[in-house]
Length: 281
Image (cartoon, rainbow, N blue to C red):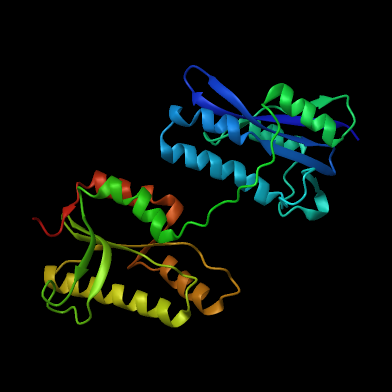
């Protein structure tokens, strides 16, 4: 079986085609080696904003996870039978090299006349990338609420009220107090709430019911229909009741579901429609 490899690059300036090599994947069609240089990545940290740096690092670590990498195995060898996602092939890497995701660019896969061995992978890695190192880090689990708070809130905080507590003094027909993620107004009222669809079903139903009650109270106050977002992630399908509730919300004409990774949809609507905070100071 022939040995192929592809170099992973970070694009620093797309217009000038400035990029740095950061990682490598090698395959013989059945088994695979992968690594990236955490040390080299850290050196270039100051050349990009923190959001982009964290996204790149998360992407590089996610490849390890996708390949079902076990940090206790130092040879970094992956067999097809162990792969969660069998995407390491010459044809697919060639596809990745042509369609960059603007995070990491793969080079066209190249054949190389060497034995498929760890020592050869390390030598090739150190020739084209950097000193070989064992990456012991794992991808930190970031809650959806934290993700929205860190990524969306700073972009819309001048347009809406953020994390505002509401009760019947704010809306006459709001019978239970609620803290809502954001609240705004242009021609119509706008509100959004981040919901964890993998929590216990009772608490999930309660969160949805309270938010729906808020939307009804707002519309009675304004005598006008509004724009209401639910931000979250599709729950695992084996959580039957939660997934069914998620489907109902996804297909609803009244609420608009937005995946937390696509928060830009909410930002775009707020900016394009010149939304203002509902409660002005």
